[in-house]
Length: 423
Ligand SMILES: [Zn+2]
Image (cartoon, rainbow, N blue to C red; front, side, top):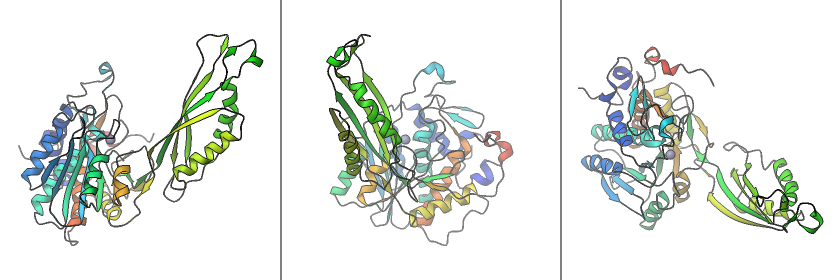
C-alpha cells in the first residue's frame, strides 16, 4: 500500500483510481466517524489527535470542563500563531432506518463517504491533521507556531467548549493571530465559499398576559392572541437594514407561538412566543432590543421579554489570512472563493472577540445534520491540500512554488458526482 499525500493528490490520486483507503485523511476520517461522539461525547477522537500531534512535536493539553473534552495543542513558541479549530462532537443520527448505511460505519460507496459528522466536521478535522503532519514533515523549522483548538461541545450548549478554552488562553496571555475553523463552509463546490464572519444571533421569549374567559363573553376577558396579532403584523413589515458590503440584511423570524387551554370555548390567559434576529454589523444587540420594545410599547399590550444573546456579529476583513486562504483555494480548485458572512453561528463567535482573525473553510454543507450525511472523497483530499498550502503561505518562505498541477488536473470523468446539476 502506498500512502498518498494531499499535495500529490492532483497528479496521483484523482487521475488514477487509487483505493480510497490509501489516503491518510480518509483513513483518519473513517476512524473518527466510527467513534460515536454525539455531543458532549468525544469518544476518544481527541486521543487520536493527541497521539499524532505529540509525535510531530506538539505540546498537547487537555482542558476538560464539565463533561466536555477540549484540546489545546501547540507546536512552537514564537509568533505568529496559526490555529486550526473545530469540534469532534456530532449531532444525533436520528432515525437509523432512514439511513442507507449505519451512520457510524463510515461506509464508502463509489466516490463518496457516508457517516454522521463526515462533513460537520470530522472531515475538516481529518484534513487539518493530515495537512499539518505533511507540512511539518516538509517544514520542521517553520516560522511562528501551529496550534489546534478542538472541543466536543459545539453542537450542544457550547458553554464548556471553545468559550472556556479561549477564556483560559486569554487569562494566560497566550495569543493566537490567525484561526481557521473547519466548519463546512462550501456550497456546490469545495472552496466556493469562505466565511469571513457571522451574523449576530439574538433571541427572546415573549410572554403576553391577558385574562382567561368564556369565548362567548369576550367583553369579560382579555385575549392575549388578539393583543399580539397587530404587533406581529407590524414586526413582519419592518426592514431592519439593507445589510452592507459584508453582511446580508438583518432578519427577524418568529419561531413559535403558543396559547390556548385546549378547550374550544375558552380564551387563554397567556401567550408565549419565541423569535430570533440574525443581525448584521449595522446593529448593536441593545439597539435591536430597544427598537423592538418601542414597538411593543406603542401598542396596548401587557408583555414581558426575556432576551438571550447567543453571539455578536464578527468580521475578519481581508488581510493576510483571508488572502492566503483565498489563494490556496484558487490554486487547488481553480476558482477564487466567495467571501461570505451567511449561515448560522459557529464557535468563531468565541474566538473573534479576542482580536483574532477568524475564517471558516470546510467541506460542503449540503448534507450536514441530515440523514446520509456525506462527503466526496476527493473533496477531503483537496481540502487537506488547501490547508497545507495556507500554512506554506503564512508560516513558510514566501517563495514556495505552488503545485502547478493542482488546479489543472482534469479528473472530472472519473468522478461523475462532480457533474451535479445546478439546483
Ligand atoms: Zn460544525
